[in-house]
Length: 95
Image 1 (tube, helix red, strand yellow):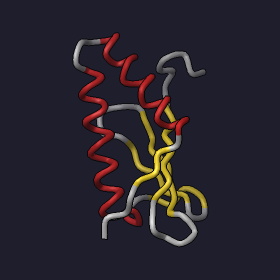
Image 2: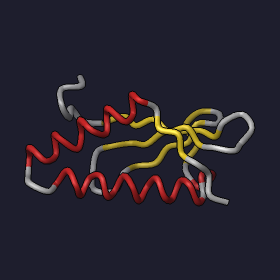
Image 3: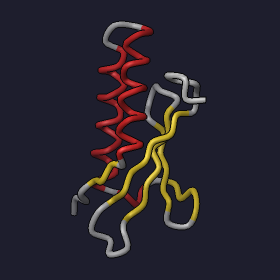
């Protein structure tokens, strides 16, 4: 079963900032970042329980090639997966 993903507005904004910051570092790098994030999202939709449990029902996984962690959990009735992303490095002045 593929779970629908719910991405919080804060996580969407963080992803957009990271995409922009990576593009400023090297042309096209933002698109590579977004493609890696999309692949992580697809894997989460297919197998959300396959990822490490960080705290109680909160799962986490690293984005390949980038210092970025995706955290999320299934909703109470287990029909969708709520996502939030957090940058591990100072990307776009977030720290």
